[in-house]
Image (cartoon, rainbow, N blue to C red; front, side, top):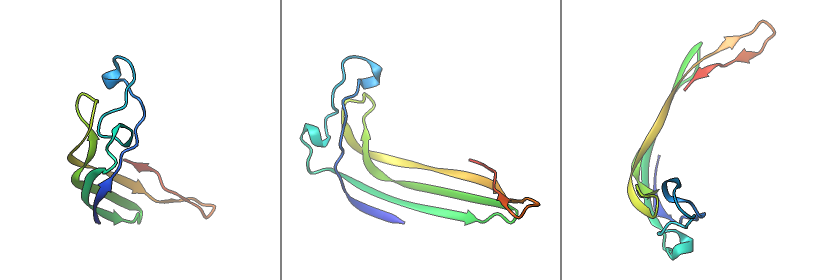
Length: 103
């Protein structure tokens, strides 16, 4: 999966780093950035369905809108993230399934 496009960030007043009076971050729609910020990502998914052990993982990388380190402006910067999960299929004696998992 991949996508590209402009994303217009809607904001709420926040206190940067939890200090001081709330303010809207620069770079958001309410502070004049109606054009938005370029958002480009590519990602992948892997699933091994539980029989009885299963595994699922997702990961994506790209660039997109994010708060700067001072939490005062929405900027374009590298993004990455994902998760991995292991699950177990347990068939109970009454005909149902239980799927406990660890993420």
